[in-house]
Length: 229
Image: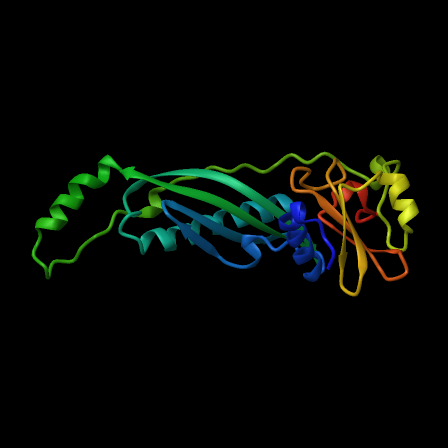
């Protein structure tokens, strides 16, 4: 593989995305929760007849997942918890919608309400039952989103990366790539940074087959594809 060494790290990330055939590959598709230091990342899945309901159910299930992890951790039970909603992804699943929600919980200092019961527990006989502070008392609020109608026609005039396009067409639409590399059996890949990328700071890629026609894209924003058509 012939690739510029100064871009090797980012190229390796793109090639990994290509081998997974465009899968998003984020935490909620791999695990239910993850603990790192004083932070618990909890995922919830919700299914509903509309996207708002599915999002709310996913939010509630993320709280349940957090409660299970926190309840099994002595350095979490009874502590102050700060909450930061993170990524949400929703898809149509037959007649219903299915949403994944990632919520970040950060464990803080011991809550005042838990200090006195904790002292009582430490002085109690060993055979006495110990009651842990109820992590379900952590209350979170969420409200349905208000969605504005959206149609493909609103983005129809934007350049679109389409399967089968030639390199010439891609260069005409999206300009010169930041870097060019190879994948598979000497097949070309163009790496871009720009508004066509879902995450402009991380970049996106266009993969070509051995005849020089567009095979697939990675991390392109849907506005620059025909996914909504």
